[in-house]
Image (cartoon, rainbow, N blue to C red; front, side):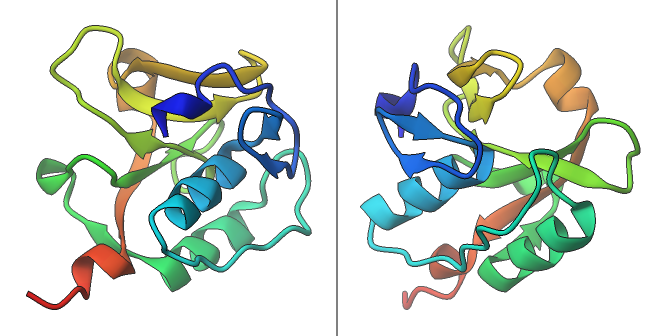
Length: 137
């Protein structure tokens, strides 16, 4: 997924290197490792939290914040804590400048940032893809 960094932000796009939005980045990263996720394409530029959370629940299991790990999907809120509107994927968090990969409209591209500051403060919940939770041991 790190190869997506620098891809231009494009609403509803699903083409790494060409255009991605936050949900598209998660969908494409999962596809690359053979996981097919439910992909709703009919959403506004500002994702509707009433759709985003139920769609995440179809594809992932919520995990406690303290148990987060590489590859988990954090949901973030912008205006109201109970209404998530943004997603990313957790990357290494012990390296400065790393910790969260996401397509961020304000940056106009996919970025990797520290999982700290505004991102840590606006976490709604952390989700693990069902394929990782339900995989046979």
